[in-house]
Image: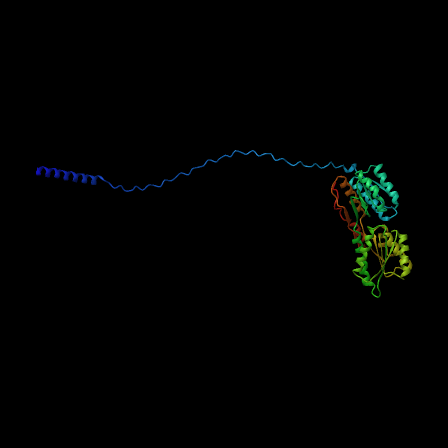
Length: 370
């Protein structure tokens, strides 16, 4: 019994040993396999084609069409001056005729000869009989035209005024009177400062309150004089702005003073009338006279050695003024915006530069290029 048990135990031990040996020998420890990095091929993305988005149409603002412009050749402008007895207005009429031909516009010119009632009747004839498209008027008496200008305005006929404001005007055109007067005053003041040193200078001035706009030359002249001779004695007389009346006015001043050292008038006729009174009274020696216009008589006196006292004249440019008036009238007919006032430039002329000053006509800022 013991022997069998021993044998069984021995067999079991051997069997177990064999199992252990085979288990150890059959087990392998695998080395970890280094994995090669996987290089990912770049994925080429196919471009996505976007479907075009249909834009909604934008509603455009309606463009206001410009009204058809009436051809210049079909436009007629009525022109009413002040008086052809004044040399300045002879130049103004010449300016109108030259500019009208240049622009190709039709004009009808009327001369009321300083009669305000005639001027009203002439304007009425132009708007009712001639059916003008616009008016250019230099008033004889500005306040007398208010009703007829209102009537014209109601008929769609604009008015451009010159030399004086008119109620209802669309634009006023005139020389820069105050500045021009100041140019003459500064010239006279400097002459007095250098040539009248033993007494207080006496200055005789002839104005015309009938014409408020041109009369701006008087305060301009006084300002220019005072810059050089602030203590000067200034005597002013009113007139009708013509030579004979101005001569009478200056004679009145010369009853108060034995002589004057300077004279100035609102225009060339008054300036020359004042000078004539001085020449008759004391020979106009050792004095300076200035004018305003550079009208033909003023130019002649400035160049004449027989009138040495007449040393300077303020040039205004009638052709420039009439160009402004016709051009602005046309632009108003075309319903364009225009300025309410134009001051045309002036220049001081002496006997040394008179020809150059007259030839150097300033340009019209609102001109129409054909």
